[in-house]
Image (cartoon, rainbow, N blue to C red; front, side, top):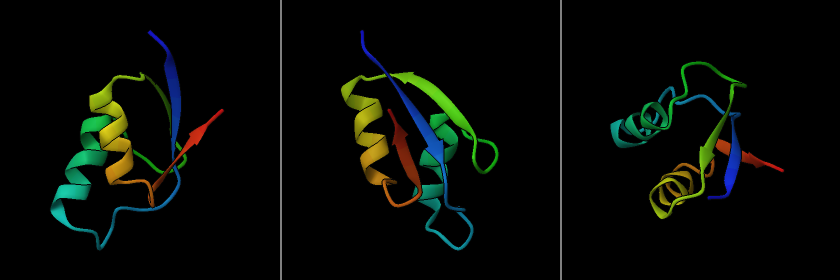
Amino acid sequence: METIKIKFVRSAINRPARQKATIKALGFSKLNQVIEKEATPQILGMVKKVQHLVTVVE
């Protein structure tokens, strides 16, 4: 399956608990961290929910 790289670019401080939980579920622990995940519908949906906090790196 295809993989995507996701970078955590904005802090989750002062964000709703659901957005913080989504960031944690994606595997982020600190700012500017880049992780690689498979591009499943579940992961893409999670990225869409916090698209203002992360970017997809090509």
